[in-house]
Image 1 (tube, rainbow, N blue to C red):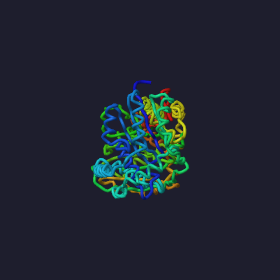
Image 2: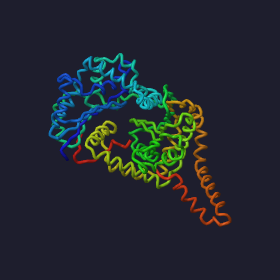
Image 3: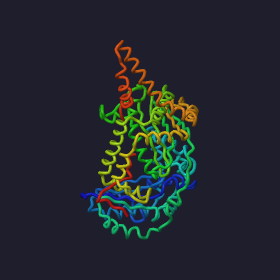
Image 4: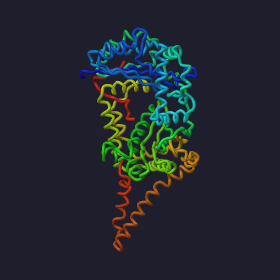
Length: 479
């Protein structure tokens, strides 16, 4: 079990539950986590954390809030009491609230945050309904946030049926005994599943203003189902690692993740591409999947065409070698992540919020191993049948045509492109063989032609979120 423990409180609460009067509440709750409570001032909270040698963290998202603490197992009772007090009894002093508003204003003015805002505004614009609510609020939205708004939001959403306490490194009964007196007075409230507001995907084009040395693009499509479609999320995970990608310069040196499709087919082929990687933003019942890239300012439209081509190439089953590499990578990274107690505790908490139960990591790994090339092709075709979403930022990025994208992915054109995908690959192979024939002069090449053709389909494009909601360990606990 080890000398350390990790505990977290996870709540079905986030920006999708905000109203016009509470827009920005989830973002401010994250900023004000582990500040003053009704029983402790902020200095005392920090001193207790330091005395325990603990690590604390809070995270707000569109659908869930998390508050975690990691400590030595001997400090678990005190750490859990501190965690519960900070989550359930926040004071929301006005001067601390104003400090965090100023801090957020400063962070949002930094140039490095623009790419984060690009993804945020893409998702916000691509949906109508609850998911269009901003997770990162506009500065003007923060003006109406005060202590009363935050207190009312916590009272409404931080209730028993929407909350999960999860831990790793502790026996289950030990965690239950510690938590019972702290949580038994919590009002039950209503099940979050019955209150979750609806959203509808509509596609979007977002152009973020500002100058940057590269043209930055995100191309995404909807895949309905999200995390709750477990089989679909498994295929999405494998597809993410199959696409792979990264930057044109890797600090890890040659061989570090460079066998994925976006490395071998894009980064190694186009000198004007600075980065190209798979993109995904997964939610409970829906999600966005695609590619994000950065290129020279004068190449934005060509970059968009390359991104489209890479997704369209997977409307046919990928080579077996690439698929097996992607599945092995997904399995390896999941196992590696879940070796840590903090990741295991988070995995338990978020799975119980999403599914109401925990999927065993071995079951999930078996689902990964069962993914076939046909599954990848079917998933990609379904993905590309939705309306495209495009977000751009930086010098020259306005050249990427969204109207051309809409025309490219009209239903008729999509069908024609899928039907032609195999023909284009065969033409490529045929062209290579013709050049080889010319090089060999009058030699007979017929005997090797068929074998070369069959091997080319497997090697012409040489090889290749983590699902952090899975875990399996005898030392894990949930309550």
